[in-house]
Length: 446
Image 1 (tube, helix red, strand yellow):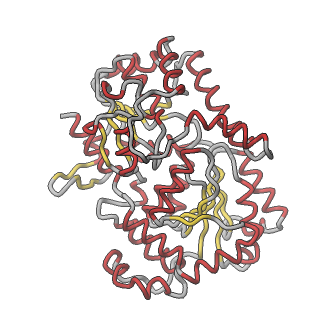
Image 2 (cartoon, rainbow, N blue to C red):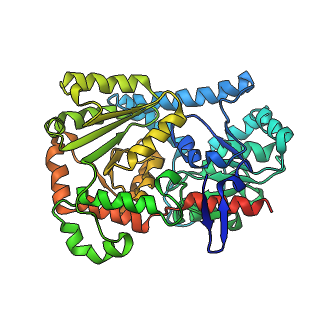
Image 3 (spheres, one colour):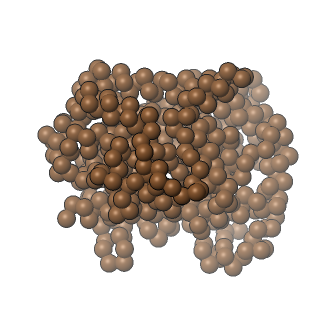
């Protein structure tokens, strides 16, 4: 399957790390599964904690109640007055407090105490006991905190790792007694590294790795695929070479000589979240850019995920605008019934994507691929902090009114704003998280 370098001297083939840990996520939204996806080929098995074969009915029901509640509230948020109020009440349980002043935040919140009370009643025991029987010496790598807590509570003997998939986290990510915990964290940035320490997690149990981006979009640690894609992308994002004129030396030193012209038209990928919220923005994009779509000057990719009703919504919009004949050329819809197929198709589309338009979810970290983000309104406290991360880092720009998209988007392109965000994300963002995570897992096996 190929190989990559870990550090300067250690060359590791994919097969050497294959099947050496349990990979656990949950199929609640896309975030935790997307985070697990780049590691799937290295795991003994990829398990959905809320939906695996043989899961007890009571365990499944508890997970399902949580998933349905989140998706309902996310969609209900659009309802005037009462929707915002309902979501604000729900969001209390995942609220992230201001970082300053630095203080002890290790006291568990209601959500953590509630989870541990469910552990006492047996929630999660079946999952962990099964892993013990299969091979309790293998590390567990979870992309959601709850399975990691379950593993520790039910005394899983192997190492327990948890991957953080947000730019800042609530107290819910740290266990009930963090100072006594053996759970180790892979974190995407310095803020989470420091935040977990405020929650009481021991410093030696936190590894600053970066977010695990898909290898198929990076290549090896030399990032040959990423750099090649970014060269073509910059030509579309900086059509009048305004950014290049100012930062020519930086671009050439990081990427080398640019090609004469791009290998694809200006392409926007709009991604809908797992709950299907904000799909109406995708409709606005089609409406405002329909003339450019007809003239084949721009391509719009609409990511519907695994939701058929979201795909059908986009198809109806396309039909209403009478631009259905451009499907497959200037318009593309990404939809698959299986989540793995969807992620594969999404990652492939990103290689020819110039602008990623989405709410600030885990996709915020995809800015490190040299893809500028147009930031849709955040949903919930975690996404608000992801938005702050993007804006402070210069990796993304807040969307203007979509009803005037054809005005502000092309102004941004002419001025080189999006090219600047693309290079900022590439230069400053952590791109090799998946390699660093695999290296730490490998060391834990010795």
